Image (tube, rainbow, N blue to C red; front, side):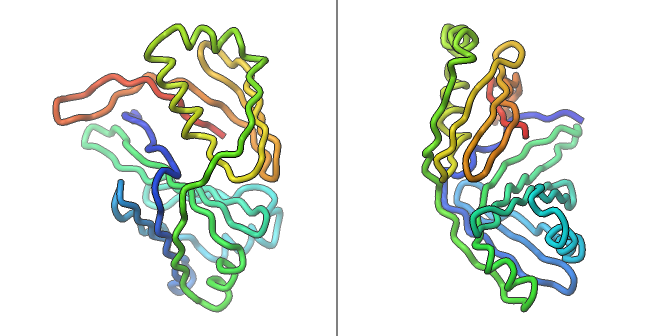
Length: 215
């Protein structure tokens, strides 16, 4: 199975998040103007409660019908990354990523009392500071190539829209890609990887360079 295209840029439009309890499941739906309605994503409450009762400093991962969810707790909020995937007849995948942030007390009230959540998630503004000194030589090479420069600029604009005052350090990791270490109220590390993909258009498949975050 191949991945074609790229995940849509997160946090560039308002996302309407809805969640309700259905027996022993939590059903999640989202809507934004760019992608329409997404869902339902079903989470087993027993599995979620076991995570909350255990080491919930670690992220919670789940999947449902080929879609994926990553959930973290920090600062009184539940921060989710939802990956909605569609499969073409050839087995290729196309998808979008949505980032939503829900007050923790609303999420707990949903689980304990069954009160539905309806929450409008507005775009985040980036307060992230970057330290690219370890990667100066790699970045110079990227900036000398028009297609790579466009992909890198778009990634730096769109992929680090975090609310807290994080500091992200970029380290070289292979040709034209990076390993990053983020410090702040939500510490994180991962890769900013250059992909040579394909975008489906009415006029056929077009090549496209883009950077994706891998954590």
